Length: 128
Image (cartoon, rainbow, N blue to C red; front, side):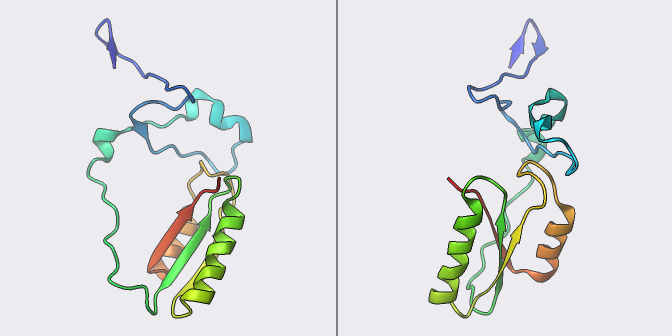
């Protein structure tokens, strides 16, 4: 959005910058750091437009699916229940449950590298 010829960031009602994505915080940040405007996302939709979702697998049979608890309220329990569902209904699918070490707003390159190296798919979840 522009005002008097200057580009400005407009905050939506819950305080997220409209049209800006890709927030990353240092895993060692204090919990309140997410409220510090210095740590707000800086990537625009235009910059991220070339990014695409991974292609869909034809089948999960014999595949490894990572279930990632993001730390959001209820995510741990949901991912544990999802893992139990796979064990009961899809024993041909191996699941690996992982919990993010820091907040849901931080990047965890080691975890993403592990998933990329050892996994075929990932479900990165939030609770509710």
